[in-house]
Amino acid sequence: MSIALYRIDDRLIHGQVVVGWGKPLNVGFIVLVDDAVRASTWEQELYRMGVPAGIEVVFASTAEALACLPDWERDARVGLLVAGDIDTLATLAGDGHRVTRINLGGLHHRPGRSPRLRYVYLSDAEAAQLKALAARGVEITAQDVPTARPVPLEDFT
Amino acid sequence: MSEPLRGVIVSHAAVAQALLAAVAAITGVDDALVPVSNDGCDTGALAERLTQAIAGKPTVLFVDLPGGSCLTSSVRLARGKSDMAVVTGVNLAMLLDFVFHRDLPPADAARRAAEAGSRAIRTPAA
Image (cartoon, rainbow over all chains, first blue to last red; front, side):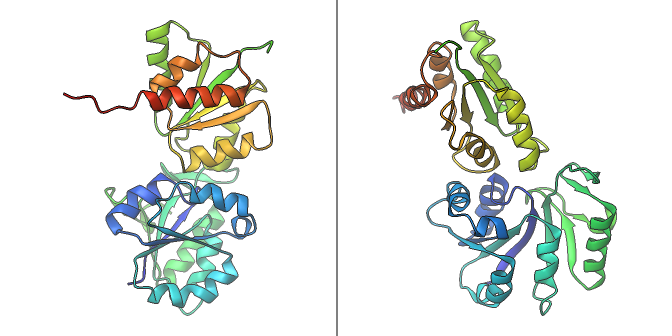
């Protein structure tokens, strides 16, 4: 098996990730890549609370994720990796082209961003960053839950 | 306690609003609870909504699930504050009990509400 879903979602681990995607994919482990959460055991406990006991949660910094990605890809269980921003996934995708597909699951309103979809807000720079990733061969779609239609990047940038 | 506790219901979609309406319909109490939905929010936006709902008053936060963005934002806000407490798994029974026991310290009110909510979960013979 391997990482079945690389997701960008600023809420990190939450209901859509654990239940919406985790159940149909039969996820055995979730990797949360976030430098701030990795540095805080208290934050880690908060995110772990929402995950059933049978699913392992791995907390990694971006640097740790780069190093561990090959092991996660070889893991016999189904994995799901989530990060809160485009930069993190761009870094992971830039290393040996291991990340070939990215799911945009939730990037919400902040100053400088404009609405692209109900759950995707992007600045012009972020939209350009995603287009650059796509130009390198990464398939990028927006899809909050598995039952929704995946929206190709070109439809909202 | 001089000021009665405020209850803030924190939920996905419109669960909080629906629970508030049900409490008002059953009890006639319509000033004890404030609904907050996480719809369209990242963690920063949800924290802002919660801060506005709490309005600096002693509060019990009633969260729908024991994990996820509603919980993480609520616990972050309540961390280290004696005038705030968090309960997860909100249901109508716990809110009905809470609105009539708002003179307790937040931690005690939260424990009481959790017990009331737990007692309401049964599997009666049909």
